[in-house]
Image (tube, helix red, strand yellow):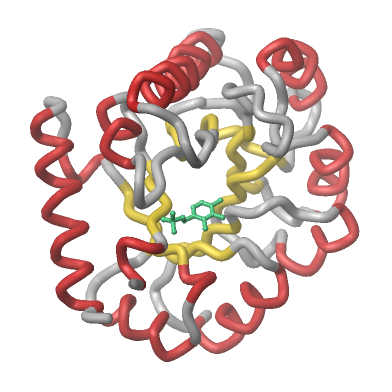
Length: 223
Ligand SMILES: *Cc1c(COP(=O)(O)O)cnc(C)c1O
C-alpha cells in the first residue's frame, strides 16, 4: 500500500468530480475510514493532512481516540451503535452518522452532555439488510426528535447496495438530497439539515454529483 499516492489520487479525483459538478472541492469533507488499519497507519493518514477520522466499532474507536485525542482531529462514528454502548462514546465524538432508531435517540438524549451532531440514517434502497429509517417513518421521527435538545440533526446519511448500478445510485442519492432539502426548508429547531453523509470508495462520484458534503472513504485510501 502506497498511502501517500492513494491519498493524492483520492483527493485529486474528488476535486475533479466536484468541479465537474459545479461545486467547490472545499465543500466536501473527506472522512478516512480507518476501520481496516492500525494506529500507525491512522497516524500516517493524519500526517498526510486528513483531519476527519471515521470508525464503526466502539472498541476500535476508543483505542484510536485514547491514543490520538490530543491531535486536531474531527471524530466520526459511522457504524450502527448499540444502545448500551452510547455512553462510552457519545461525549467523545464530533459526528454520529447512524442514528437509525428512536430508542437510540432517546438514549443519546439521556447520555449526551451537550448537543451531538447526528445524521439521520435513511434506508432509501429498501434493502432488508440495511439499517435506517424508511421514508414513511420520517415525519414521525422528526416529531419525536424535535423534543430532544441534545441531538442536532445536521443531515441525512444513506448507503447504497453493494451492487447498485449507476442509475440506482443516482436515484438513491438524489432522493436523499431531496428529502434533506424538504426538511431543511421546514426550518425546525435543532435540525439544520445542511449536510449529506453519502459516498464510499466505489460510489463517491455519484454522491458528490448529488450534493454530498461528507464522503466516507476506506478502501481507496488503505489498499
Ligand atoms: C467501511 C465503511 C465505509 C468505507 O467503505 P469503503 O468502501 O472501504 O470506502 C463507509 N461507511 C461505512 C458506514 C462503513 O462501514
